[in-house]
Amino acid sequence: MQYYEPLENGKIKCLLCRYHCILKEGQVGICGINMNENGSLKNLVYGHPSSINIDPVEKKPLFHFLPGSDILSFGTVGCNFKCPFCQNWQIAHTDNVNTSVYVSPEQMVGLALQYNTKSIAYTYNEPSVFYPYARDVGILAKEKGLKNVFVTNGFESVYEIEDMKNWVDACNVDLKSFKPEYYKKVLKGNLEDVLDTIKRLYDAGIWQEITTLIVPGDNDSDEELTQIAEFIAGVSTDIPWHISRFHPDYKVTDKEPTPMTTMAKAYEIGKKAGLKYVYLGNVALPVITYCPKCGEELIVRSIYRVEKNILNINEYGKASCPKCGEKIKGVWK
Image 1 (cartoon, rainbow, N blue to C red):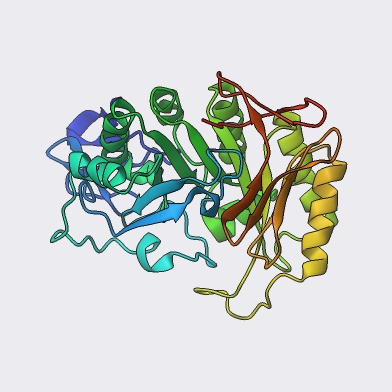
Image 2 (image 1 turned 30 degrees about the horizontal axis):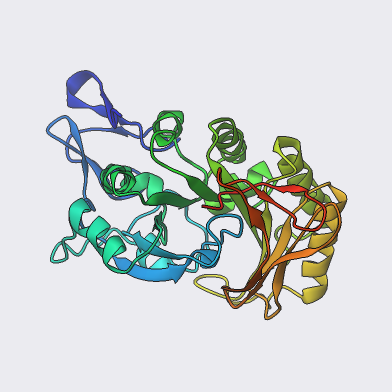
């Protein structure tokens, strides 16, 4: 993939996200970590992760992707959104790169293999802004039989999405609101672009799950939750919807955690919209995948760990309910 487009007078257009920042010599984009250096795009965080952890894949959250497996997760600094409730603001909302830490793509894949993970997650901050680093890791990971996961705000450029077909296996996309003005004024993003990304990822055949953080007073009305659920269902009723409970963080400390009554309401709205798989996140309750046809408990999770999994998975990696034979979409092997 070409990460930038040369323009006149030494300027370049960054192609990593939908902003398409026009950068003159020495200038960085909105993300704070991609710079025009001598007429080329330099990714300032390349090889400089801010966080590396081994997580259960359920923590991403991905519930229909290699359940019960571990995933090597890493991120850098920088982001192209400015969400005031960001839970990783210490790294996402800074451009302070720790250049004393260097982990090559080969070393990162080596860590994943050393800890016997099945996949690598590009997460914690927005992976589209460190795409050159992520892609080099991911291509090597695929060669070693590992899968790749993006945890993203959905602001990838169309060029990135086209390239992601070659190496990204799954995404969890944040759909934070259904109000264009909220995206623009509060998050500093664009709703239509995020909706377009969700459609493009689905069309590309990349497994996708969607998360909505329910922020009291911001996006918790019946109308907005219905719009979100109906949009997802319009793309595919097989897309899992994760409804995540807000807790005070970063610049939003004046709101209480999302009431459980609101969480339950959102769940019912999702089911009414026709979504087969709706999950509550950040709640101290078991999270269950039910067969959408017969209601059988197929997968039971507690605190990000799988306690029960009775899916039938055939030699081709297709899953079905052992009771009624209903096909259950996902990536299972």
